[in-house]
Length: 300
Ligand code: ZN
Image (cartoon, rainbow, N blue to C red; front, side, top):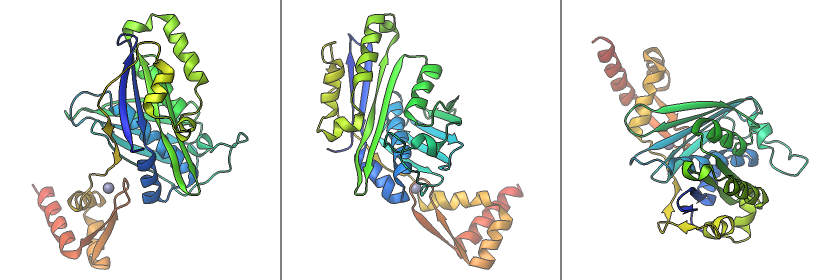
């Protein structure tokens, strides 16, 4: 099934639900960054969440960045997802692998670390991103993001994200978020019913692997409480907006002395985009021009 995102409502608009399948884009990230199993799961979960978060934003061009900085061997995770259905991201140490947990699961919490912070930055395109931070709960990412939604957004929410990967690659990946909006939040029976159903839901990737569609999963969860699935199916994909010009511009961060070194010693530079792994070559002439621009800027 193609990577896609669908939206639904239930309980006369009191419940909002979004589901996303990200199997192919998670596989693309795995190949681009040569991710270990546990790194694939960590990045895949975060990418699915970024798409789910971005889906609730209104203004065209809106994006969500999720940064996770735990004390585990994987290092930091950075993901950038947009309302337009594009997502990109990377982990600091993509080759870290850990033995499975006693339950036979990928040890995402151990790799990310149980202590640290989760940052969510929402940018609606006005140039003043809105940012908030919570402490990690377990490093398993799903729990941490649910905790973020409960504390920062103050909307009763359930979020499930999952990635199933084996020797052949990513077999299933995606997630869903269900939010109880203020007009239904006082309906305690409804909230309890939803909690019970989500607790009984087999893992998200288990459902996908058994051939269930997002529509089937919504039907199972909300079918008898006024489910309305919106007709639009949005395609989602891994996409990085980097370019030769942008990466060249980023070389300015190294400073004039370092650029001078690159010109004299290496007669050029190779720069890699962290988000997608694309390599860019800067020629000596380009570096000379960049340095001249910097000198002109600093003498103003
Ligand atoms: Zn890139």
